[in-house]
Amino acid sequence: MSAIENVPVNKNFLSPLGFKFTINRTPGVNYFVQQASIPGTSIGIATLATPFVDLPLAGVRNTYNDLDVTFRVDEELRNYREIFDWMVAISFPDDFVQHKAIAAARPGSGKGIYSDAILTILNSARNPIIDVNFKNLFPYSLSDLKFDTTATEVNYIEVTATFKYQSFTLNYLI
Image 1 (tube, rainbow, N blue to C red):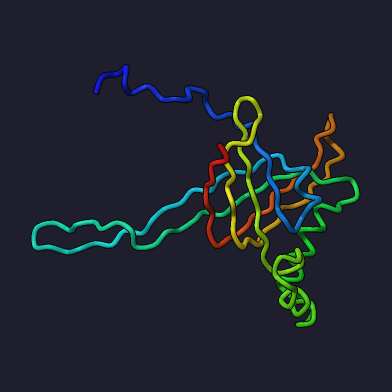
Image 2 (tube, rainbow, N blue to C red; image 1 turned 135 degrees about the vertical axis):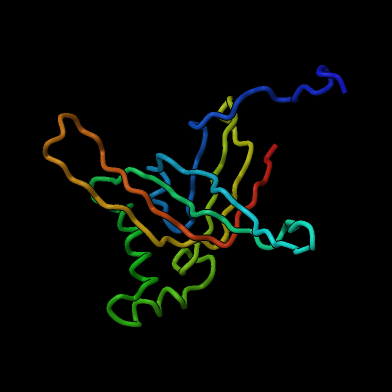
């Protein structure tokens, strides 16, 4: 095969600015998302021992890295509270009643333990081309809200929510 035959159809590079992120359960967070990523993934490797050399065998188990989403906090902390209250309900720190309501929520109601999310990737013309669908995610970490009176300019507060999820799929829209 010659170099002329090996030219990609689309020669545009992927821009890190072209995305939209939506968590079904947290509409207040969605508008303020500053950073999101497609998490890394790895597969486990089994080893087949032989008298001469150990042979690696692929495909034992797929492991997904955590999903980190950074968003700006609105001045009434409503979007922060969406994640915070979700985490409190999952963890039932005071009594079992807190967890009972979230566990009993009807799937798809937006009030359960898990939610689905979509990272939509945009092309150079800002049109959606790929949806990365996250299935059954839940937050397990929320970073600090840091206030600082020594700052010389306004740097709006951002926090990072870290999620676990069951799996994700990439779906082409074009």
